Length: 202
Image (cartoon, rainbow, N blue to C red; front, side, top):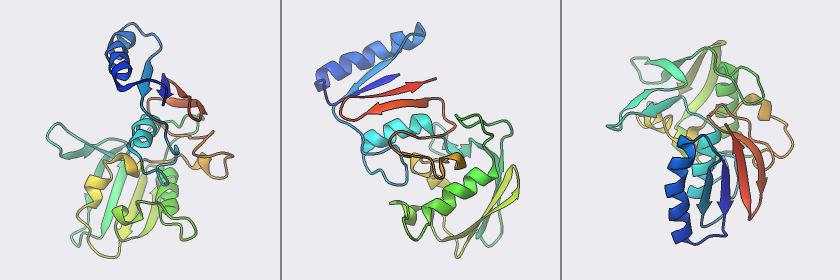
């Protein structure tokens, strides 16, 4: 998939969107023309809709929403909450793979949450995660989030692209958010030429 940025009018973008469906049906390259560029591929730093539309193809979320807007399992096959509403335990699907070939497991979820709350450089959506005090790896496929107080918006947020799970192999990777974005979503980052195009591969 090639995402063209800032070079076509809205009318041409609409024509390209119509062509997107037939191109997908024929297993050809998809070109998606848009009116502007993204600011970053880092879900913890981006604020634009254009960025969200792109990184939501690269990363995935613990939960999703069904046609009625209800939260349902996604990367997590199930979850439980304690009676006090302060502990959420998520059981992950086995066999999820990051784009670099590493398995996606509970350490990646912990990495994502810890990074969102990093005091030196927190996520722009830190408040949306709620009063999480810790992310604990119970076993490779189980992670527990502990909250200071109950936070009913946590489950809906975990179905939102702003809570995308980052593979921990992004840690220390050169150019994360620009030349590197390792996720487990349906599309893999190939390249981003600022002001021109973003190229993704299935």
